[in-house]
Length: 417
Image (cartoon, rainbow, N blue to C red; front, side, top):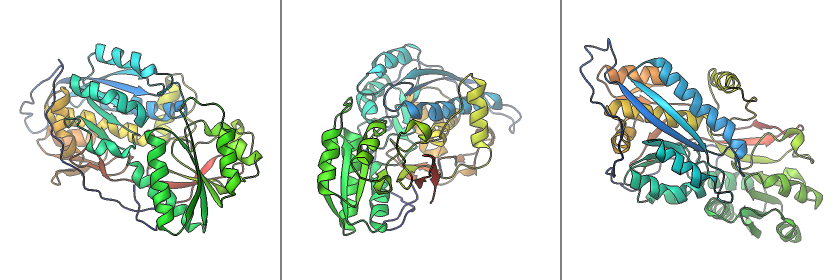
């Protein structure tokens, strides 16, 4: 997240606590690198069993296609590189904390023998599965977990994420609201770790900038009625309203507009910022929001669409966390190749190194390019579509980008910063 306090986009480099890299190990396929004679052949011959736990259903289902396409495209390109590692992907549904689809899915993934897992998308789901994965020796990397508490989680070095903490998104959004000369703010937020964390960060930043939060209203995951929350906000008539939700916004947004709060006062977050188009019965023109990720470069979007539609799926509507999901798969495969092993703890021990955290790697921007460096006996430093990544000792990205978006008349978003 490129964010400095008081600006709409800034570079953050955060120090984090030291976490041990030891872990219990589950049975897996591993191999020791051999001398490759100058790079004429791969240094290892590995088969990595990778799982994905992403929202095919539930309140974050709109994030499923971009994230699943990112993981799938990465696996396809890793396997096509023929660089000493093949990835076998098992994809399962995360659902959400209300539907609990993840309970069955985790059993399936562990039964399939995965030693690394991409997901969950929701911080709330990851909190429920992380300890079990740690005990099983499975490396877990999320493309979208933003809960601040993961930084200090007792994960034995097995947890990583390619998305920045809510503390950073909340700071960017709070500053945006203040910079727009809003003096009073109402916040509707989801009553879980994601919602309460962002609520606190937005409130602190906005009030430190001289504004005042005049109303806060929470709801529980699974709720379908939000009239009381809207009435609480409307009663205080704030200059702006921050909505921290998932797809509940499809109900909350129209209720706010019908109550006389125009969408140009809305400030949204990554969990609800989407191209709604005709799905939204009211105009969102002028609403703004934030989500992680730099501008996607080269032909990445075209490659995602070609892969996803080639698998028989409809086109991806937006690309939230697609780059982070792609990078998560590439980083795990590179760490496995560098370790010469597919066991979770061995991969985890190389994750900081191949992301540039050791400070002595050679920059590279694709799996094939980085794999060649590794197979030639060097140290790779991967920079991807989510940015430079550069994991710290807690598995957090040290630098990340938060984009600011605004809704057009057709209820689709465009990036403004």
